[in-house]
Length: 205
View 1: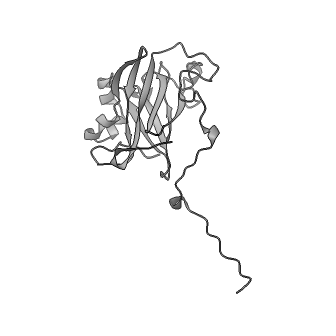
View 2: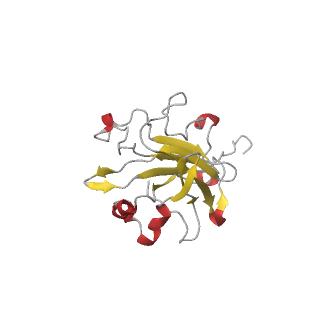
View 3: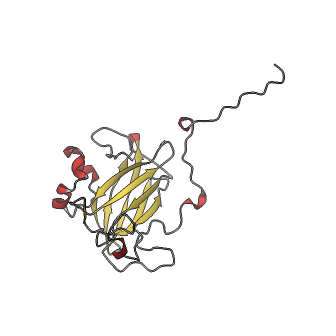
């Protein structure tokens, strides 16, 4: 048929290498959780810490241009969120959310404060941060929860960490990196895909 229009086929998610992030998706101070905006002074509550690491894929190859988002409680264990019954008492100078982008070597960094513990459903949550990773080739974001090595007793009782098989829990505990510019630093590397005994444990989102 001469006049028949060719059937146009659109790519489906499995055919793309997205997600794709617009230039304004990441702002200069998004990875600094100690400030609620670029012009704001940093919070005066809590201990400021540096968080850094590398995002890797299979073969431990670095993942460039991945986006990481973290959210956490303030130094007193409160969230600036309406679901937190103590949200009105949360630190007004601490946003509790941040975003970072990996460079060509897969390296990322955040500046934040050490979160406090809190009660949830009658159980004590150890200080932790939640992290979401988005990258080209991932059909959906992956997320997990990371813990600080300073609180082994609380980590051992944390109800979320206890859901992870015991031999995998240490992979969700950050490593102490000493001090950087007078600030305590922590390191956590993310292996998106790899050997079963090395891959980062992720939770259903």
